[in-house]
Image (cartoon, rainbow, N blue to C red):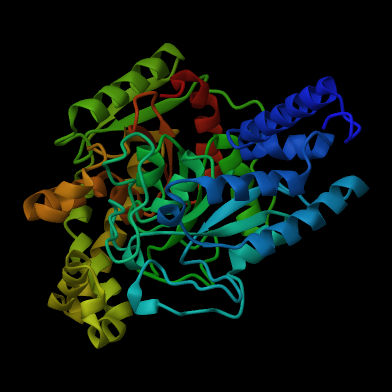
Length: 469
């Protein structure tokens, strides 16, 4: 047969070896940072079409494909990859990530593709136009792989969604991945996207990033456009990336807002002064997250960072305002849709929304007045620090089965999951979470609103200190 086909046994062996080498290289692509993939495209070592095919193949071949992706936009992805390849050959790339495939949380409108925000209430909702951040990303040459699963209407930090799908956690197959950007985190952690774009209202980027050993950037409310996204609490909703590296997060921040990318060159911890937040943030922190946090503090001290412990009474007072601020706005946003078909919701999420009905308009307005005062106090208190440090989450990812059958466990874990991250949202802060080297444990850095560039530089300098789990 070898002679008849014109191929010797040696030729056949060489062909198989070459194919295996190519496949190995493509598998290696799935583990690279978005920035490294972009550099590979720039140098000519990586073809955007082959790269996109590698990701699409990995998605289709993954056991958890349908738990991670709500929609795979293969046709769009390959068309965008062909255009990126042509630009690369012509030396006309649109950005450092031109040709790099990413995933999108299923609350970003995608023209002609169902965008259902993890809810049966929105089944069949097909927008006619891309969200503004997706348009910005497309204009920068990013490849849209598809839409990832999420918590119902983004109103849960644990990532459990029995109504559509619960994505897996990379460190524990029996645990939730964190939410509400659950599929976004899983898509990156399992090598099914180079980065994921999510949203954060009370921790929905940072919790799944921390529990899946990723970098997660929470932007300042109003900085990155939410136009064309399914809302939860418009005054708190933010857009941010989940990535493998701080460099990727910086690149994506610039791309999402259509502005210059923050410059990380020369980032250093030399001469920095950081505060360790004691108020609320260190209460009930469990063994593994505490170990991860203490490990990072030790490494930062060794690197010359001056650390001071900080008490801030306004944090506890602001946290007490969470119910009227978050639940009242969320229920006000969704009441008519929810009450038209409440049976389409997971009971725990339904109850959380309905809790917003217990607050009056005057209570909501008064809560905002109080929060504005607390924010002013907070910003004055932290002005002398380069960043404020705290564990991203006080707990590890909870068990899925127990969450489904143990009401007390569900309530306790759900409230604790978002407790620390919610501090950043209430105080109007920018925030970033980094892996600590302890699986599913993150270090969070907070700064004043609008301080993303400073936080990214600090995070880039700190990143090499901690290693990976």
